[in-house]
Image (cartoon, rainbow, N blue to C red):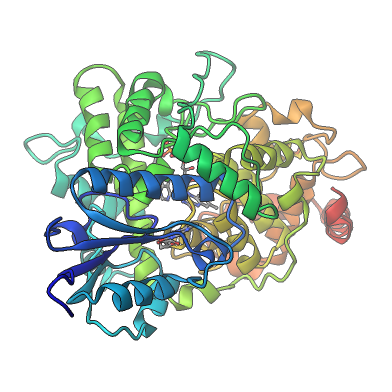
Length: 513
Ligand code: FAD
Ligand code: DLZ
Ligand code: SF4
């Protein structure tokens, strides 16, 4: 250490781009130095969508600029495939050697993989790791709630957080509107009215154009395309994206929350998850902004409650489950699945219209909305019995909002039921009938959603019954599934046999569907 050595070398990760970060609370431009690094190991730990890498690198560069404008000195490592600094550890080692700070300060990473790596760092300066307090509930708060309960259900954690935050609560402690949850009102099919608004779009500036060129040159084999990149990459633009959602989409968010469309990729969803997850927006400010729209008469209660529940309920619950159950959670496979992920998840080349449209939209946008993820690509992987690790890797790679802490419980738990029901009391398995009810995909599909067997039969139908039949031992006793088994048994042995034989044939030639 010398007289000119900084007090703290503050490491900021690519998904920690907020001035409210715990590592920055006492940061002093006169005494501290900031370190940010675009490194191969983070960009390559999965086959990240090229728009996701662009979003993160560009948002990192803009965040560094904002800190410089505040007077900070920022050591910024631009991505260079030939750089000897390949990992965050390399970058910190290098920074400590050059700058000899008193200590390194960082906010804990959002995921197990990186936390384990940081545990192993051997630095020539002490490392101070601060809690990640960018969530509404701390990890300890979730543990305290979960401890001793036989079952963990999002709805009850959500109600506690409603009480604690006061979001959509009356002064007497009752929920606004007299109900906690208005989901029953949120199941409309979308038939073109009102028209779906165009997604928020930001014209790439010089920094983003530089990043686009870097990603184009150095990540040619990664998933997805770069054309039409229009994500917000600054706090200011992310706030504009929030405003756009509140005025253009929130009023219809509830009604069409479960709807899917052959022509509209995003309908009335917020498209805010990439910004929430990389720090450009905070969950509480987003919930409060939506709440104001209800009180101001700009959006109805079913929309605002439904939206707030996604963030205050699902997002917080999912994060709690992740930290409660890792690392063992990632290896769960309670349904014993061992099928490889079909190649069409990467190529989009399948005749199944719902799958094709969802995967092609994912390639284009690094985005698909929740029902596409859950009831189309997720449902198919569940029915086909895909290995959980393979489908988890896919979801981690292809979405701009994907980080292990949120992707893993959603895929392994909610979609694949591989955790034995921690995340949901029954699997979200569905036949083509559900997809037909909630979308217009089937009318553009060469398969016939009304048929279960025969050459043109919708694959979801026989695969659904195959799933039900092969997991009878696990699910027949589930009170929420008894009716399904009674239905199946009523179909008679011959019909059941034909359905199962058809499903077996589909599974044998799954790559050609
Ligand atoms: P909206 O529909 O507008 O919802 C508003 C916000 O609520 C979202 O921005 C998000 O922050 C939050 N939210 C909604 N549902 C969930 C949920 N189930 N878990 C956590 N937060 C939720 N979300 C991610 O942020 N990252 C992921 O990697 C991810 N992987 C998923 C994988 C699968 C298989 C499934 C079924 C869901 C996954 N989700 C993930 C949850 C959800 O699909 C996305 O948050 C949502 O589609 C993002 O789009 P949006 O911002 O338009 O969401
Ligand atoms: C996702 C990502 C990518 C693609 N690249 C970087 C990077 O080069 N440098 C960095 O600091 N962070 C990156 N990230 C985000 C980290 O992987 C993220 O901090 C972990 O996924 C923890 O959530
Ligand atoms: Fe999907 Fe089946 Fe409908 Fe085709 S018919 S779009 S495969 S649900």
